[in-house]
Image (cartoon, one colour):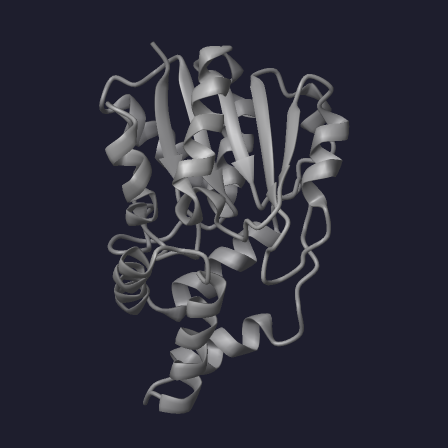
Length: 239
């Protein structure tokens, strides 16, 4: 029986609560909150986050038949895990991800550094919070309010470091050797209008599936669980 593991990123609350809809829907599914988010010390790169997730899973005797699911940093971890430990992973469902460093909008890092300054600059902090709200424009209002509170607890510096970590991730030289089954999703209404990095992964991994989602944004799983959960169910049924 496949073990579904949902892995979060720096947005949508920056913790496992981003996947509340999935944890309720998929019986037995699990989702770690990565170190350096609500507690603990952050990892310095995707490879070390991958080892932390693997240790977290092994401590629960979750050592095989894994289906790793996530966006942004979580998707990067899923790719790294599948490359490093293909015999433990049955499949990955990834979105909002690149196999190479991403191109960022101007002020991406400066905005978060301003928000993290002490003593706090209220205007800069509110600007950062407003950005999180815009990024979660499609998330159900009650869940969005909860995830905004999570963002306040985790803070802007964690997000700053996560984005730096994502941008240092580069597996272009290995991605064509990816063995587990792969489903790639892309929201076509992402607020940041990023390049189509997902297509590059799809073209490099011939056995992958690639689905574009009109009306879906940066965090497909959290925004539209009623659309995405059935896609996961179909994918898992075919493993």
